[in-house]
Image (cartoon, rainbow, N blue to C red; front, side):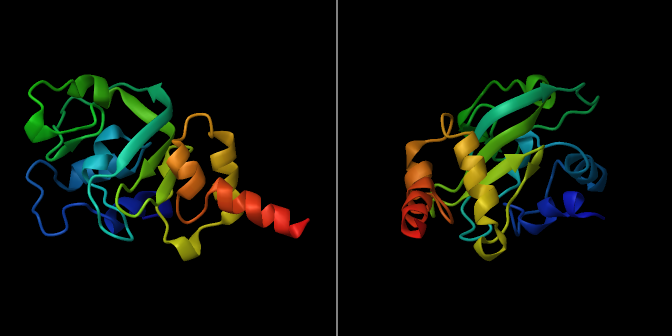
Length: 168
């Protein structure tokens, strides 16, 4: 199993809950291709374990949906709503899109995790690269909430701007 395939196994949202709808084949199909809306139903913040994470999507692309479609168990990121609060779902539309670029944000600790080239980068703070994270923020600053740009963790543009001024 390579790095691209292992990230989902590191941070499942439902740590002690058996997965009723998913089997090993389903997990494998979830992790061997691009970022899917339904993966947010499985992810929690790796730092504080908050679920669900807020998803902002910047770029998507269309794919052919699989024959067998599973509904999300707890949270539908495609509609940004808990499943128990939502009667009608459009699972075929959800399964027909993959996320090329976006952002996952923890509403509790204000940490953000970029989705870049189909891969959510959910690394602990000490393993993140400031330059890469700041470049991502700068590239998408028109689409990212001001709260994350100014106060997001582990890096933000306010901190970056002040540290850049100190170097001059």
